Image 1 (cartoon, rainbow, N blue to C red):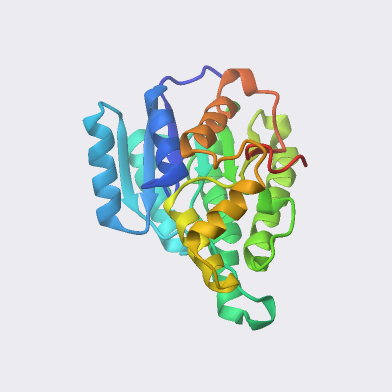
Image 2: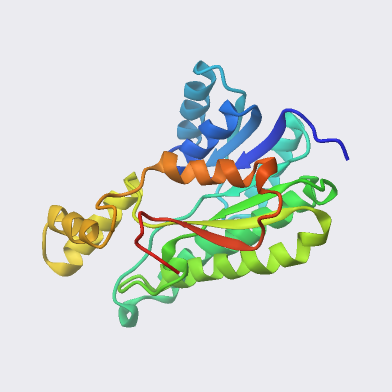
Length: 261
């Protein structure tokens, strides 16, 4: 099968942070990129910003926890650019608190957003998105170092990201004979709007300031700083490249040495 150029990439949760950095990087590397997020205004603004950088980007609103939205998203991407070669499952959310106090609804919301959505979008891309017929396709799931170790006051989040890692490894082995690779990227502490929300939550839980939480977290990182969204996107960029064709079913950290597992 002859590789298409440019390739088509779908990136979920791509209006800020890691998703935005990934969409921009792939577009600068001659991918036609279709993005989504829950807020239509944010999608339109991000598409406009990236097009102003002379990048081939389109997008649509999508809540990845809603099956109908996912079907519409993949259909729109295929209609605009054609069959999907690269999928980056980035959309997700934080979620924590004292486990004994979590409601069923709070638990389910995190699992739906972070784990079930990855399955749902991947299935749709493999089928109606045409990826199952492309023998050099790439699936990248943005997991977390919390998907390899437990994080206090984040049981739902840790469970969901452990699930993403397990799903990645299982699907990677399932699809290996087809030439489609499946990998997880596991960020540690990354400076994003979501990270600020997490620090605020821990500050409340610990009865301290957000600055104190930041210093506490930084002290755990051997490099002494948070990673950047661009550094996480850089690993995604490698994993979708030809030189990464033999890397599959892996969960690779981008964490400044925070995790050696």
